[in-house]
Length: 191
View 1 (tube, one colour):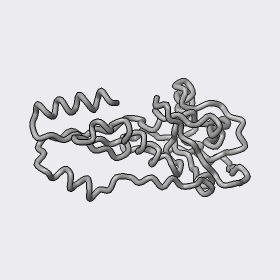
View 2 (cartoon, rainbow, N blue to C red):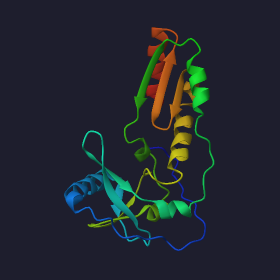
View 3 (cartoon, rainbow, N blue to C red):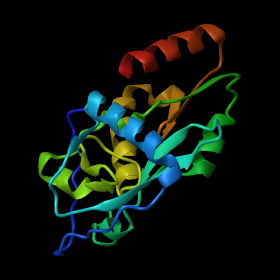
View 4 (cartoon, one colour):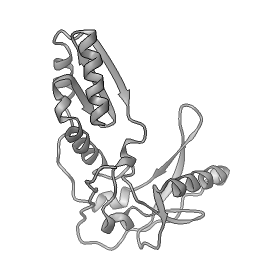
């Protein structure tokens, strides 16, 4: 895990709390996911005054993703204005005579970033089985993307001449096959 914890800066407020979203046909799947997350240390049981509703969304492969509706928390979160990469610049850079490309997606990348200890309670989410909070950066928080982008940009800064990173997607590009193998080794080493 990265040593840089994600901080959730908010304006003065009363902790937003909501009820659990009913999804009776998916409760068993949600329970299993919660148990997996607890076992992996991604979440902990919580006694937070915050409570965002959690739900399951079906993915393309028919498995489910746990999604938390942080709409109320995001409304009181101070925006991190750090920029995300510009796609036009990315396309321009890739069009400069490179012939070898590799693209990969980091699995559960956000979960590699810890939440600041004092802010974990703000990530609390409610389910039919109780209240839980994240120990790691969840998707759905207002500033999750800029935090993750900053971490990835810093992690791969030495690889910048031959790689591009956009959140959890990385492209490695080279002009020769031997350079490409070398560039891939550098990126994997940095990760």
